[in-house]
Image 1 (spheres, rainbow, N blue to C red):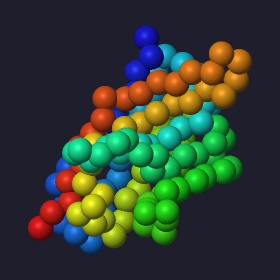
Image 2: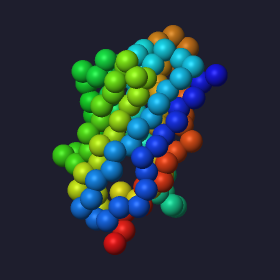
Image 3: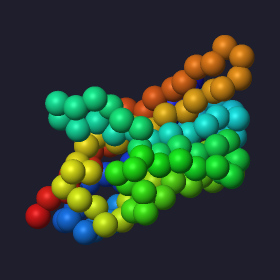
Image 4: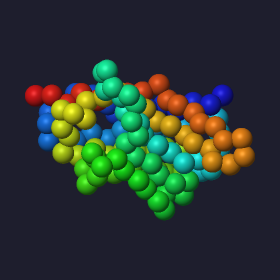
Length: 119
């Protein structure tokens, strides 16, 4: 059974930090590109950050470059999103996504974790 379980969300003041975690099970984690998406109320889901299967390559949305860092630990089947200098506009539900780029490409989604940036 495939599972992606996010944690680490919460309420934080502007300028603060949070670290999201996503623990994967039920598939070969190291074979998948891992991504973090977010969706704010009334907005479309957007890609925040991505990391290649062994962590050598990362990509970020322009809105989070220099503030967010994606990383992964394949020994723990876990991907992280370190979020610093948080802004109110970062408020959203954050979702973990596992993407298989091989034959029969498919992806898996977590249930999401709420991040609220407010004073």
